[in-house]
Image (cartoon, rainbow, N blue to C red; front, side, top):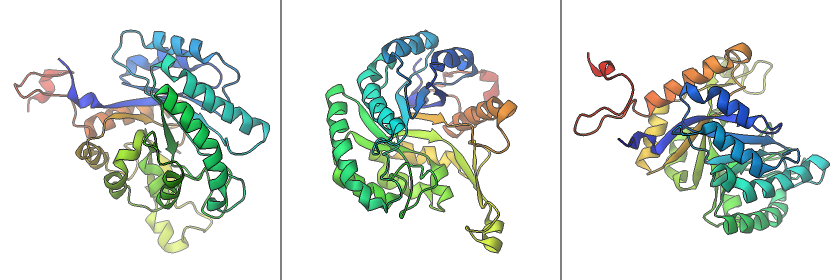
Length: 312
């Protein structure tokens, strides 16, 4: 029986910069992840992505797991050696996405370093218009992650797609429908933005979702503000932060959205190191429950798990 609940899949990210993605998928696929996002940090290190894609698909095997999105995180707008590697990495990921079964490549826009955000737009238009044509030719969508990487409107090093005002500017420069967002509520909470109205407005531009959350310490804000010596917010693994994921997934469903929510780990101040996968598996279960739990068909037939759990 097909499972309509899986129109929104719950998975996780796996690092691919060192070629370890396939091994990692094989190691953790049995834990119940429904999708994976292999991602590269600044460089693909000259890997044969066609071969890596084949290995990742082999690691998935006959499991009901998808790889819908590849990640390429760096600054493709500048001209340092690693920036040039990032730009080439975007080209390679776009060209090779089909080897993974992916139809989307996600990452930062890049930024002209140290300048106010609008001053990056001419370089953005130059680079991304070309990458956009390349992606369109390959049937690939481009999704911009919404992390500021400690930047703001006035200055920064990595990304200009971190604010809804910036999204308006970006999609004015590249209005094609295959440009969108890799969205997550965490970064909105970090900026004290309510994430739910964003889904209602931007759902048609959300191509991929990162499963990451945040805890805002309002007591610190009230006493010290957001520029004091104490941190006012922590990034969290879903299930440990402030977001109501049932509401988030409900809003996505109401908008007709389908795709993958892939957990972005390695940020939680508690569930990290030896507790990393403990936190991720708890997040996986939390997000599946927020999605509605196991599928039950209209005729009463049960879609998965232990039917006895429905009793009582």
